[in-house]
Amino acid sequence: MSIISVEHLSKIYPVAVKQPGLKGTINHFFHRVYREIKAVKDISFTIDEGEIVGFLGPNGAGKTTTLKMLTGLIHPSDGQVRVAGYTPFRRQGQFLQKMSLVMGQKQQLLWDLPALDSLRINAAIYNISDRIFQERLEELSTMLSLGDKLTQPVRKLSLGERMKAELLAALIHHPQVLFLDEPTLGLDVNAQVAVRDFLRQYNQRYGATILLTSHYMGDITALCKRVLLIHQGQLMYDGSLDELLEKFAPCREIKVELAYLEDETGLSRFGKIESIEGQEVRFLVPREKLTTTVSQILAQLKVLDLSISEPPIEEVIGELFKTGTVINS
Image 1 (cartoon, rainbow, N blue to C red):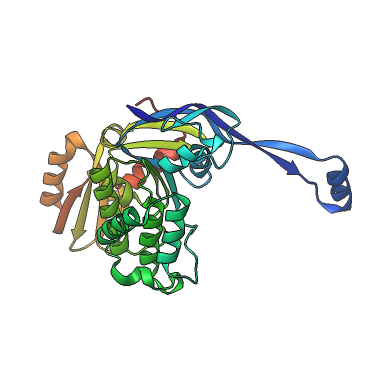
Image 2: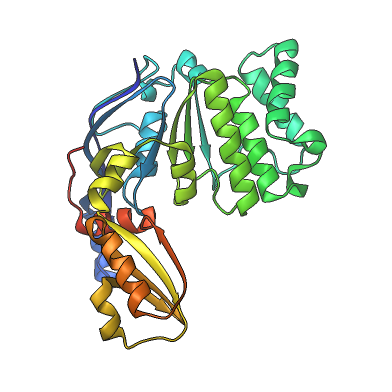
């Protein structure tokens, strides 16, 4: 059953255009001219209850604009949106109880107060009783391994601890739908893993629906089976991450460490050279030629080490964004 439904959604911003110089300033004041920026262009998709879906695109692609329309922060220029049975921009109380938005570059916790104080304010806003608040606080803080950190001023917490506290604040009312915009932004590797593990547990325990944007592909591959790709405001792809890789990564990567480096022209006979760093060479080889190519490399080169892997997913998706081709999933 769909909990998020988006039909022909668009957002157009009018932007004033000003010419340089005094004359341009005067004209801008009396006869302002606008141009249109189409941030989101006629996108449609649905998300079922309990899904974790990755929402990917380069900077300026329209990801955050779409999230803001889905959460009711901005009004769409065209199209329809339904989230948990509500129209987001109406900002009805029942709708706000059912969703939450976490933005990695924004914070809702009060900087100089302990996080616990902000959590109590959130509980009051959502009319959560003291008993239920304490139960949820204990449960979520245990899942997030926050311990006694909630009694410290927010400014004294590490970035990872603050992000965990932000998640706790966003989930204290147990929303059905969680929108996450770069939740691991700036976190170290251990903190990223901790946040991913928590989101996976929360999804499994409560069946919450999660729409996740991130520039860290580790977040996407660890949590999302399905991805939406958006580029220049248009939805390029909606489907399985595995199918995307199978269709657009027909090659495997062979990484070889050599005892000595041959001329690059000679090495190209084994496949497309992706990079050469010191004595290490990365080749892209079609899957059907993999076995033959590995045998040739081992027979003809002085190999110290050899490994085979899928091409990095960020490279595959990056190539798709360069072409800008809309893909039928």
